[in-house]
Length: 207
Image (cartoon, rainbow, N blue to C red; front, side):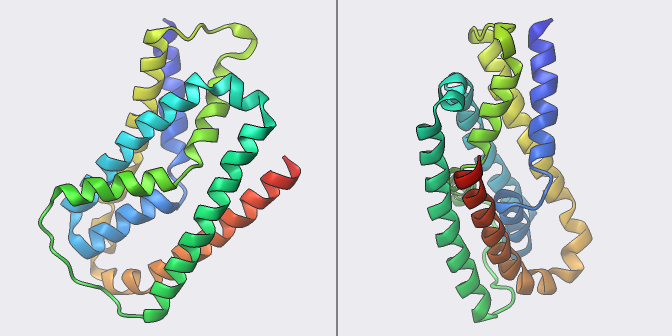
């Protein structure tokens, strides 16, 4: 069954794609440290909701974006600006060196909104799912009717949430070292933004 194959491929691809430390999963981890596991889970839910729509945009525009260098470069340049701004923000925040900033551990809708905002700022899933959608449609072997599209976007969102949920569960392993994590996580995030800036520049000039 075509839907089953696409679901499994997309689910695994989305799950693996979120495993390396990145903007979204590190935000989930930071939220667990500063505001508790439930708020971290809400951030993961908010991010996964945005991934659903990012995957939807990607699969609908896969062929157009994949074949259009102008659109691809616009997305990359937008990502470059976002990563530079975030890198400066995290570096300044790290220099303040306040350790853990205690906040409310009561779960609320603001954590879901936070996850959605962070996921919107993270533009890399769109080209990632564009490439995946294009690969699944090589030679026109797959016809993207409504059922295929729904299968694709749900698998992408669920796969992303699965990995983010594991980040929430693994918080137990770092809870005793939360002070150290809070102290250095902003430096890590700033360094990560620098790496993403370099990668984006390479993709702009050499892709």
